[in-house]
Length: 317
Image 1 (spheres, rainbow, N blue to C red):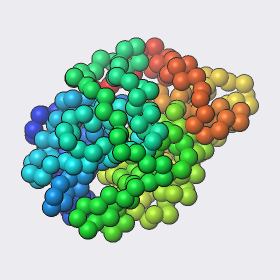
Image 2 (cartoon, one colour; image 1 turned 120 degrees about the horizontal axis):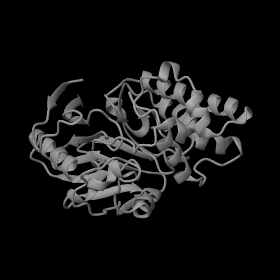
Image 3 (tube, helix red, strand yellow; image 1 turned 60 degrees about the vertical axis):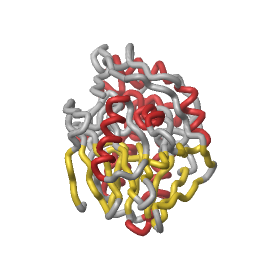
Image 4 (tube, rainbow, N blue to C red; image 1 turned 90 degrees about the vertical axis):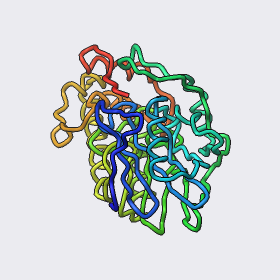
């Protein structure tokens, strides 16, 4: 890592102050602690004629702080925003990038429009969203697109199957061996695949992400990492599959299985209640559901809330 600076503009201190890390010359990660619900990472690449942003943030306040942090690095405007998937922590702030081209997979556009405006209760604790306006990608692709920062090639690629969601893309800068993974990878937080696929995520990490040979990975949530993060997440995904297989054979419902599971090496991951949601997806796949197939998401969310003691899930966005 070349350098790290703490952003002071539009100060955010709960649960931690965001920071800019220059992970390669002109390539910056914007890390928002502590990476829990709705607190994501973004990043930006600085060229001589403008900036490319990888994702936005979840709230007006956090996205304005991100824009201010970019402004502390360069006076150049953000000309392009690439969305790695449709979830609102990566897209709700799109509308604040005035004049920028918003790029995403076709299904990312569909997902933003289907999700609609942000909400918190009864699922999450209250969030100060701000004056959000939906701004889905308006330049879309099916397989991928190449964007350029001066002479630096940035490959935006749909991963080919459902994983974290049905519309995940990665941003790969081969010349620098830097990968923006979106939410295919979490560091320090529990991976979440309720709207995607456990099996699909394993395939994507093994067959798409790992072969890139990335030396620096900016995950969707958590600190900047190295290639070891891929195996850490794969280990968790296989743990979920094995747990689901044994619990389903024993006649346990997903919530019962989550409550009875010893998390072992994964006990320190944040947002543990996601295990209940992940088990819903894993059970569906054991029953033959295809990656990304529709399941009862609200039942899974209800089980996550029950796992959380019947309380809304904690969100500090």
